[in-house]
Image: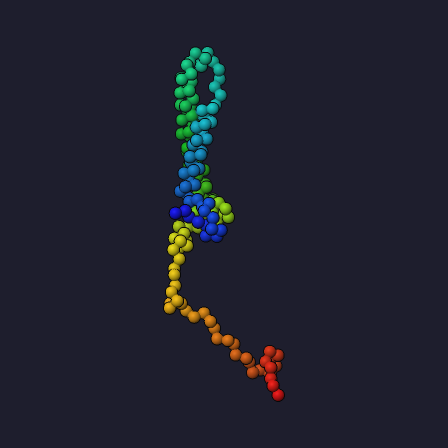
Length: 141
C-alpha cells in the first residue's frame, strides 16, 4: 500500500531509506559514466590495441571512478537525510510536508467511535440576563 501525504493526500511520498538508495545509485552511476566516457589521449599503444581491450580499459576506469563516486554519493545522501528529512521518516514531494511512520499508521487506521460511546456535544442555550441595562433583553410593560 502506498503511503499518502497527511496534508495534500498525494502519493508522491518518499521515505528516508528510499531517498538514500536513489541518491547513492545516481551518484555512483554518474561517476561510472564519467569514468567510461573520459577522453583517452591518443597514442601508439591505444591505436594498436583491439577494440575489446579498449572497451575493457574504459570499463575498468568506470569502475574505479564509481568506487570513489560511491563514497562521495554516500556523503551526499547523509546530507540529504540531515537537511531534507531531519528526524522525520517521510517527505511529500508535492507539498513538502514531513512526517513520521507513526503518523502514517494513525492516519491509515483511524479510531472509530460508536454512537453510544460519543460524548454529547450540545451545550444548553444561554439564559437571558435580567440586567435592565442589557439591550438584548426585551421587557414588556
